[in-house]
Length: 320
Ligand code: ACO
Image (cartoon, rainbow, N blue to C red):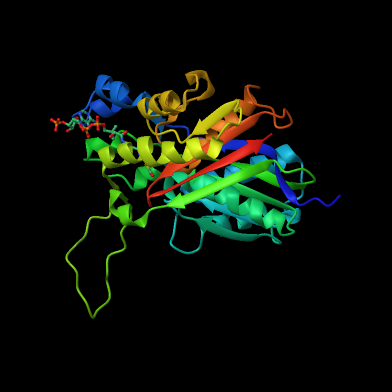
């Protein structure tokens, strides 16, 4: 039998050392631990001081190669999902490729904000189905460089980090089903890193490049479109765990209720990390594997659901 389906054979994460609690933020911002926890569930977040996105993603790639005990030269691709790359060019993925010496791997980034990891893993699966053998998929973000630290309504929500998986060709399908969606008409609901027009022929007034989010708009989108697509996607399938994008505890609790599923099936770690955008789902996946709630060969059925800026969203059904 030919090996033409992707299987996750290793997971890894990297969180920068510095932890910033809600009380730390309240020292120089008009906010409180009570407000942040009651509205979002977040208690603290990690903030990268010296590391940029490529450094964190490079650490994840090194761990994956070590855990899977593979030669980096055997990698066919490296895909990084990020909305906070070091540069517009080179891509973070190319930097990671250089860091780990994966000279045979093609490398590129995917920009789909908090849906980025789901988009990237779905893309990787399609490369494996078309003949590639092995690759790395990472979600990595340094959103701390995008947020406006004077804007309490968004600065308190986000955190930095990176995580990913190593995907290898196998005989049986593991990523069983995928559904990717976007709605560009709502593009302005979350914007960050605007590139101002700086050419000499056309002057524009100075434009704000910081992250701006219509929190209520995204809240409604998560509880309507995202939940509707998840329901359609899952249909009657029995699911062991739903790994939802970790943005807000209240959103996850409401989605669990709308799905008619017990909250225990919706693991959360946003209390510790805040919203790490494209990194949130793989960080959670790695923690669940590390604590043996999930086993990479355990046959459990999990759904990964990412949603956010774009607007973009997507679901993957994986049988481990
Ligand atoms: N501390 C104290 N008060 C605050 C803070 C803060 N950090 N932030 C806002 N407030 C105040 C506001 O000024 C407002 O005060 P007012 O009533 O006097 O005007 C009040 O709190 C309520 O503000 P809202 O914005 O209405 O608060 P809400 O209950 O909607 O919660 C939140 C905001 C947490 C952002 C919520 O809307 C949310 O979670 N939205 C979804 C975000 C999401 O899921 N994003 C995922 C995508 S991210 C990506 O793609 C990168």
